[in-house]
Image (cartoon, rainbow over the protein chains, first blue to last red):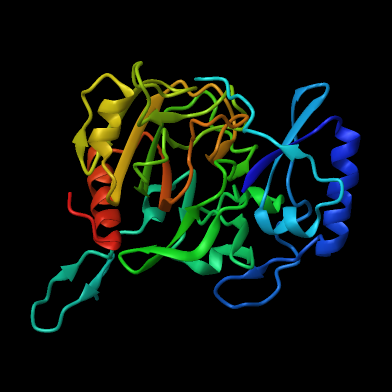
Length: 86
Length: 238
């Protein structure tokens, strides 16, 4: 999992929508014990989420497999956004 | 006729106390990764971890890249939730109403010493959390949105003052952790990562959580019973 940066949220959204469509999200989870679908439980509806660092710097973590499979529109390699210390 | 809890032992005429259950504490929250029927996942990534307290404060995470894993690691041969992402994974229930209360959090953790800064359980954004700092360069041990906090690991009270003191105290083997605090100022609970995500991690690579029980003002006996229950279950020596 590495961080990438987009120059706008719109640019991120275009790429992320492609990933969502490609992965076939949303996914209905299964019960780990029974293996049965759990449609009433939380589904996986997004691949990743973006953090606004500035109005031209929108960062999100992306797995290597997804970065390779969805290279078109992927942001530039970046670093984790700063975190406010407690 | 024999009345009361327990079972009769033939030949003794005595009663044996029923086995302890966290439900005896009327907990606010009870998460148990060993009970895999409480875990909803896709390819091992957890989208929901059910609360066994009966209060319905289930933790959820709908974003795949932020979902911790289940079925990938164990403590004492029991399933645990494992955090292995880029320090971004967490599960959240934003409505758990613990503001204004005094709470004790019992948890079984195993910490990766190379990648952790906090033992965490808290509310729902970077400004409102309960944490216990376990690494870092300097500073005092903190507890986020709780005050008058005390920390016990395997039944022993922490008395140090720095992040590194806590790190050394907790160590990197499975541990029964107990945090008590008063005047919680936020609702909600977040188990995992907080905030934007600098190189300094929160609950990160290889960190594991087996069980968490949140109780309001437990008695000394209830504390002892809970820690003994967790230690026996997860193979930890108090």
